[in-house]
Amino acid sequence: MNVRKPPAPPASPGTVRVQKRQAQVPSGLRTKTCDKCGRTFELEPEQKFFLCRDCYEESQRRQHPRKARGTSILTLIRCAQCGGEEYLDFLPADPAEALCKACFTKRKREQKARSTHSIA
Ligand SMILES: [Zn+2]
Ligand SMILES: [Zn+2]
Image (tube, rainbow, N blue to C red; front, top):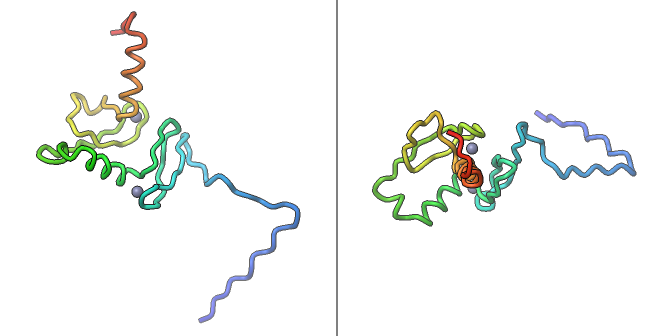
């Protein structure tokens, strides 16, 4: 069988369309290509990762080999702040209120900033 697609019509001269941006992901997520494995993954606007989650976790494991050994129980939580899923290497007191590391760090910073008038 010879299925041949008709050639795409040539772009009209003068209007060169350069698509710099990839298809936009809703809810502010950006698509990034992993530096290590080349796969695309989603990234929150404030995050600056160069690796996909798999490679990131692998690099984390390599950076903290002691953590990986012994108690390697990871808890998958859904961040109460941004809704992203993340593995925590500890068991959060309340998984429903658990935050991803990014949001946790952010919240801690905010709490520190207004520690003068603490809100219960
Ligand atoms: Zn990767
Ligand atoms: Zn989060």
